[in-house]
Each structure stands twice: as C-alpha cells, then as structure tokens.
Length: 313
Image 1 (cartoon, one colour):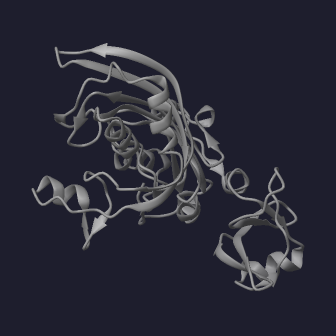
Image 2: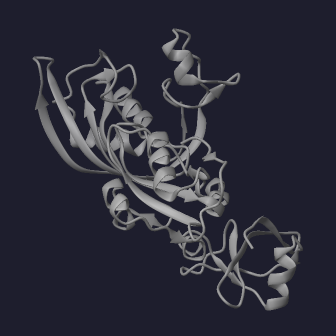
C-alpha cells in the first residue's frame, strides 16, 4: 500500500504499453513479480500500483512502459479483499508470519459481540498502520526500524472501510493454546487500509487478540481477479491490456474532437465538461480520447478548465 514502484532504463518495448493484471502467488514480494514481468516484457520500465505482502495473493496491477504513468492514480482506487482472521492470538506482525505475542480464548465470543466490534471498524475510521509496514518515518521504512529493534510510534490516519462482512466462522483448537476462532470476511476499503491492522484491532476490541492468516485481493478499482492471469499463464502467452482499454476500466471517459486532442497532446487546457462513468458518476481524473479511440491524457477539471495530469500521446 505504498506509492507505485517504477523502474526505468533500457529501450522501449514496441506494442507493450499497457497494464498486466497479475494473480500474485503467495511467497513472492511485489518486487519479485515486477522483476518477472520485466523479463517477460523485455523492458525495465515496469511498476506496480499498490504493494501486496508476500503471504497475500490476488490482484496486482502492473504497468508496462507508458502505462506506468497511470499507476500513481490507480493506487488511490477502492480495493476489495477476501481474508481470514484468527481470533485468540496476536502476533508481532499482525499476520501468520510473525511470532505469537499474546491472546485469549475466543470460543465464547457471541455473534452479537462480534457484529458490534465489526461495526466499530466499518465506515470512516482512524487506523494505526502495522509496525511491519513500508510507511516512511524520518526517511526510513517502518519495517526496517522495527526489525532493527527501534519500532517507531506510528500515528493513526483516516481510512474508509466500506464493507466488512463475515462470511463464515470456524472454531479452531491448535497446540493446546486454547479456543481459537477463524473468521472468513470480505473487506471493501479505501486505498491505504491495512487488513492486518483490521485483524489486530478486531482482536483488541474483543479482548482476544487477532491476526490475519489469509489475504487475497480480489479487486483494485475496475480490475478484478477474474481478469488476472498467473505468472505461469503469462510466461506461456504474454499480453498487456492496451492503454486505452486499461484507462477505460478505471476512469470516466471524455471524448475529444480532433482539435481538442491536438491541443491536449501538447499540454494545452480545454473547457471543463462533465465526464461520466457507466454509473453516471464523475469524480477524480478522466481519460480523454481522440476520435480514433487513442488515449491522449488523464485530465482533471478545476476552475472551469480541464488540465492534463499526464499525457500519453
């Protein structure tokens, strides 16, 4: 959930400008996936829109060549996850990769108590990021400081949890540690929300401790797990989602005249208009298209004008 990672250098790969929607496997870092895509695409100009922890799987949006310019705007989009939270144990990393640091029996947590705790973690909330995270503190990553024995005191920040729905509850007994409870949940949230922190805070609210044991990202903005391809599939047949199509999946559209397209391609401003999505909403950047369907730029409207945020033509 850090800023998009981009790597530049080397010659452009003709015809390779676009997004790759990867189904990231567990055990790999997001950087590992970027490195694999660099080799498959034959270019170093590759980046990702939002980190996934090594244990997590699912949608990782990768930009190739000109599409890396989209990534900073994609990191701001809504995300959706399928998660498993274990109540009854806290860990040093707030997930299954850390050491158990405490906890209490969770077998007697009632459905009503659980629902109330989840309601308290839904909507606009203040969330303290995990100590093992990529957030920078005085120029250094929090996880590096923590592993060096100087864990920083991270400040809470506002995030929005649009949906936190428990889909299954399973009692677990493990290693004689007392009663544990596994919850499967669907979480839909704003960018910057840590699901590990939700697991931690749910356990704290219930007095049982809690941590994340499984995380699968199922959607980033308009890019869904159904559209993702595994690295093995990409190795067999490497394809990118073309720029125009990639932008259409994430941003409202504005169709330009030929004159407007020429002006925007040279950094000029246009008169403001209301760009709408399929649902009729208009928010954030809009993708501006030439009459032939070429993506010219992402534009933002302000003070009665549409100015280019990034130009692709």
